[in-house]
Image 1 (cartoon, helix red, strand yellow):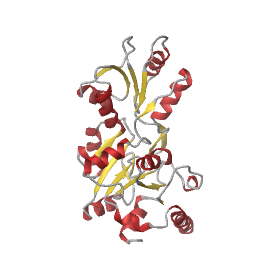
Image 2 (tube, rainbow, N blue to C red):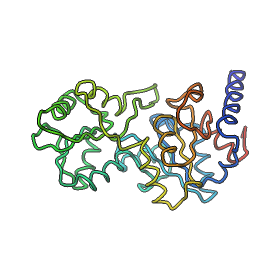
Image 3 (cartoon, rainbow, N blue to C red):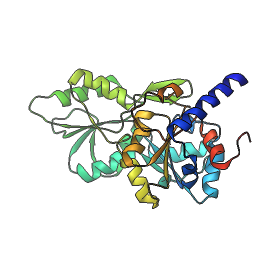
Image 4 (cartoon, rainbow, N blue to C red):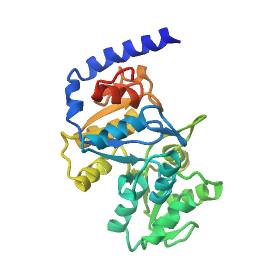
Length: 293
């Protein structure tokens, strides 16, 4: 076991030098934008090194913000989840694909009738913000919205297909995020991107994704906190969403291998990866020089 771990560390050290040979950049970071699932937690199991890293960020006067594509939970749900995990966080510490999509809908589709596929928690959050939401087929629907719906049933899928294929109707199709899989404690479950792919296969339509890899979540977080691009680091476990989002926003990125991406995925990646570590624990050790502690 020790020999395997050492081989992994040697491999990652080589990758770090190949990806970005100026690790001093890390010590200039103040705004740390964390993905949640697969990066700092699996379900509600906190990944090793998370508490130490968050404590270090507070000590240097930095800020941790959680930018997640998981739209199955409201911001209130996330605050409560973090409390159960022992992580202190306020509502303003979360920028989710769900909350970003909500703000987009309020700005661009406030008067439209929206057919929404999502959890009860997310649907209620949309309604509380004054949006016209239906969960049933209606002729007057203007927008179809697909979120990460862990309460999905076939009736919702069928209604979405009917709305998107109806002749003479050019309805807009929006989706919170393009993630195909969501890491959980036993492995993976289908995410919003997989739900959309199922509908796309039936309708020959594709949605406009509003969450990662679009740069909006990162740009909003920097605007909210006042930190610069040079001070910002995106940390995540997916190359095609987390890393791509940071790249699209023009900030440096850090990939960890506790979720979807594996070390072998780095070499063939089309996105720029600035740093990669086995877990956030190794990132913490690099930032503090406390390797092995």
